[in-house]
Amino acid sequence: MVPPTTSQDFKRPDLLELGSDRLTPIERAQIRFIRHTFESEPLDHAVRTCQRLVGSRWITYCTDRLTHLHGVERLPELSPDESVICVSNHRSFFDLYIITANLVRRGLQQRIIFPVRSEFFYDQPLGFVVNGAMSFFAMYPPIFRDRSRAALNLASLDELAYRLLQGGAFVGIHPEGARKKDDDPYTFLPAQSGVGRVIHKARVRVLPVFINGLINDIAQQIKSNFDGTGSPINIVFGSPLEIDDLLAKPGSPKTYKAIAERCLEVIGELGQEEQAIRREQP
Image 1 (cartoon, rainbow, N blue to C red):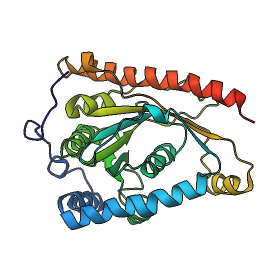
Image 2: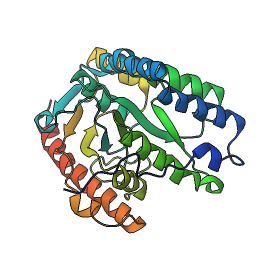
Image 3: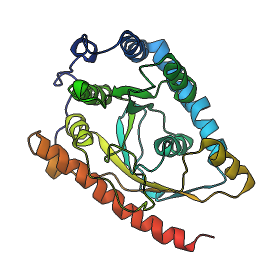
Image 4: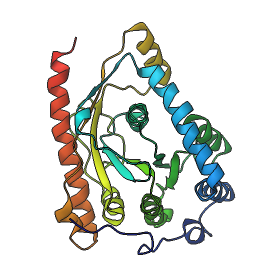
């Protein structure tokens, strides 16, 4: 078994410091506020409670009639203080929200964190409101698409690893990096090394998941849940990823990419399970 990293071993870069000349005032303010919710025990407790009792419940209520869970017997028991990474394919804006909401129903107590693109969610006041109202600030840290700020993404990824090393965090991340928009849910975009970097540095359990059936029109998705016209939403859980061989290798872009590819390989196997399940569904 590869020994875990500890928070004492980990040198955490400061996103605010590194981005002092590249972050806008509103971006700095939002990052500072959400970081404070982790560091203040009363705020952290309040956020965790709201994520579980409010955010997850409205999500499951609006999709419950269409959602089918498979492979739940493969899920490990997680103590509240244990951190975990969930990796899934990326077809809709809501993949990780539905997956996580159903895990909360099964007892997940960790603080939920999803990295998100900085555009809208961090560079506009309305993005802050949406982040708070929809996810209780689960959308953190920001990922920057413009090349002039690409170096900040390494600090954001290491911020994720740091939060995992603090314990009690549930990080959801897509190995593809971006949403796949074609009509084939069973093939993926190329694996991106970012998820491998987080996994290699944090060395926590990794849960692979395949999801299929969601659409990106939230109003239509909710309507189809209640009138019965929607497609089944299948969520297939896998056993925790076996990657000790890759964790034993030195951290490098090549190693990180190999970990991300292993994630997609296992998610693809779960996708084949889902395809067989869907053939039997009405």
